[in-house]
Length: 122
Image (cartoon, rainbow, N blue to C red; front, side, top):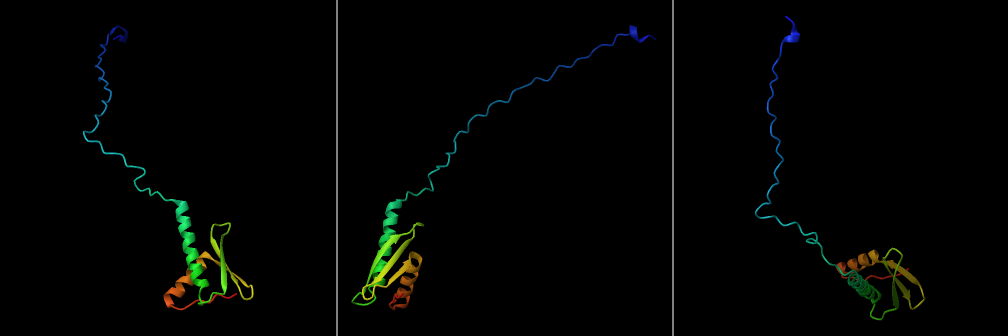
């Protein structure tokens, strides 16, 4: 048998039809996108800082007026870090005491809770 003279039939199968994915239809009721400003609260920074300063001034005045006749004057200024510093000056001898904002809150809170006056001395 000579293999050269034999014909072999070629059987071809049809290739499967390629189908492109169909685009999905949009859902009937779309869910709204979350609002990026939903949790945002508008804050007036300048008004907040003015209110903070007014609170510091009130507490400084309370501590300066420990006695009926006040013998201290005070000045409030802001340092480079943005913290308020209260400078008390004794009218008797000119001594100066500096009290930073956190300490002023502590002193004011201590005096209010105990009901006693706080004496500021350097």
